[in-house]
Amino acid sequence: MAVQNLFLPVAYQLMKPAHIQKGLIVFADAHNHTVPSSMQPLVREIKRRGLMQVVEIYDDYQNIPFSRLLKRMLYFMKYYAKAEYVVICDNFLPVSSCRKRGETTVIQLWHGCGAFKKFGYDTKEDIPAYYKGNVYRNYDLVTVSAPGCAPHFQSAMRLPQKVFSPMGVCRTDKYLKASYNRRCVELFYDRHKEAAGKKIVLWAPTFRGSPTDPKLEQYEDILKMAAQIEKEAYVVIKVHPHLAKKYPYDNSSLSTDQLLPVTDLLITDYSSIIFEYSIYKRPMLFYAPDMAEYGAERGFYLDYESLPGTIVTQPARLAGEVRRVLADAGEEAAAVEAFYNKYMSSCDGHATKRMADKLMS
Image (cartoon, rainbow, N blue to C red; front, side, top):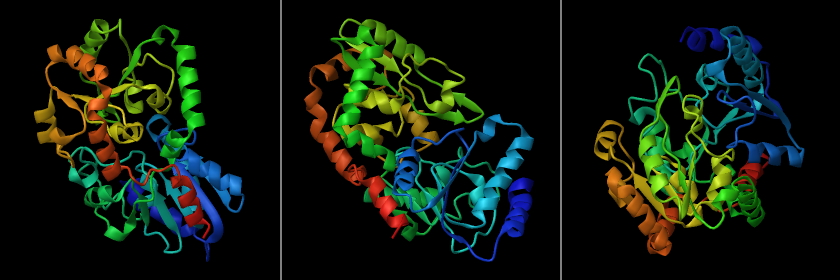
C-alpha cells in the first residue's frame, strides 16, 4: 500500500508532461509476460491500422523479484502520465494508484464475459480489506458482453452507469469465424487421435481461493466419471490458468479457447466460461456438489437453478447425466440460445472493430 498510495503517485506527478501525447496507446497487464488473449485482438487491429503509437507493458507481478516489480511499475507510470489511452483486461493496480489526468482514457476490456459469481466489491474474496481506495476508480470505459451484464459490473466496481458499455468482448470475435473453428478441430484431432469417433466433454472448473493459494475441487469425481464413459466420450480437463501451476492436471496442450469449438458438452461449476460457450448453442452441465455452500459464501448474480443446463450435485449421478445430455444434445438448445441473447448479444464477431473505431474516431 505504501508503493501504491505514496511511491507511484509521486512518480506519476514527476513524470507528467504538460500535455498528453495524442495517439499514444498503452496496453498493460500484471498477470502475463506476453499479450493476454483478452487483449490480443485489439492490439493486433490497432497495429494493423497503423495510426497510433502502441506501447506494450506486460509482466507477471506475482512471480518477479520486488526490485523488478518496482522498475516495471515505474516504466508503466512513465507512459501512463502522457498516454491518450491505457487499455487493461484485468485488475491492474498501478492504474488506480493516483489521480490521473482527465485527458487520459482508461479502458477495461475485462477478461471474462457475462457476470456469474459475484466479484469485486460484491464479495469479500477479491479485494483485500487493507486496500485503500477504489481499485477501479480511474476506469473511463468498461466493455461488457451484453446490456444485461452492465448492472452487475456497476455493482461490483462501484462506478457510474455511464462507464459501462455493451460493446462486446474482443476475444470472442474468433468464435464466429469458420476458419478459426476449423483450425481448432483439425488441431485437436491431430493431437488427440484417441478421441476420434467419440463425443468431446470439457471439464473447466472455476478459479477458487486466491492467486497465492488457489484451490481445485471435484477433480477425483471427474476422473471417475471419465473412466465410466470412456467408450463413448473423451473427457478433456482444463483448469483455470491461475490453478495450472499448482494443479498440473490438464490433459490437453490446447488452450481453453481452442477447445471450445470441438466441445460437445461443457461441464463446469461456477465458471464464466459458460458465456463464451453459449456462442456455440451446445449443452452445458453444472457439477456443483457444494452449490448451497458456495452460493451462500460467494453469491451469484444469476439464479443458479435457472442456468441453461442440468445441475448435478451427487457424484454417483454424474456419469449417467453426462450420457443422457450427450444422447439428446438438442433438448436444451433453446435455453442456451435464450441465455446467449440475454448475456452475450454484443459478442457478434465485430467487437474488436467497434472498439478500434471508437479509439480512432
